[in-house]
Length: 126
Length: 224
Image (cartoon, rainbow over all chains, first blue to last red; front, side, top):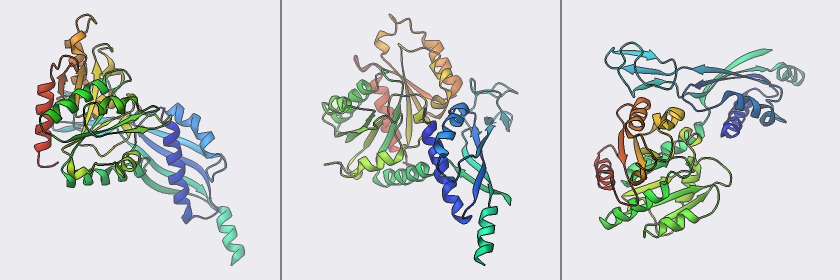
């Protein structure tokens, strides 16, 4: 249950990135979470509402894209996608591999912001 | 107006950056750092106690940082080996992170990284959360005891898949526990193909010689 720590890190990173957009409100935060990242999406969503309260992210949606595990199969000389995380064998030829190319991601992909307020404020100042 | 801002940033970027710095420091100091991860009760402390004692008997300089939610019981147990040991209390946090390691390396009386051959980090007993946090270690060790289910690697694939070595503990009581060795070894290999597995007993010393040889070889590798 380290989802609250993870959510707090997301809020910090997004807040820092908002420095370039003063007054902007965040509408959506898009994450890429690997199938092997050991993060429970339901728990992230549960923590989200609590963590964003009173921040510039308040009221924003969390959108999570799950990234499947991709490993390199030396026998096939190809990157192959796995259906699950119960066996690290090539689905084509059955060779085991520890050479993972994807599936551990824990990333903030992008955010959708509304900076109408910021633009208006800038207009008034001008 | 609504706009999309691309961030493409690791959520644990701060931890990862700190861990990278630690890894560089360990490398420059020539100390081999291992991160020991398992469920509570697997026997990490007993295994580490024996490891420290045998390393020291062989003339190696070894130390340990030990993580627990509360108490310094483990640090006191490990200190009996004669090795320098420092307790990290996380006060409720379910894993160690790079910042905690960094903070506990500072002001560790009598211990300099450059004066060590081995530094062991005993993580908080937990098979889920520690897998996301890089501590800058060279070797991540997943431990599993014969009293746990043989299917544990299948239940916790993230940790076992990210491990560099696996240690089976309490092998001396494998038989009365009805431990299915072939299934356990097979499951570990299914999740982390090619991993080195050590079958050990901290009580009888079984498997320790092979483990110590592995440590010595790992330390000797140039890319340390």
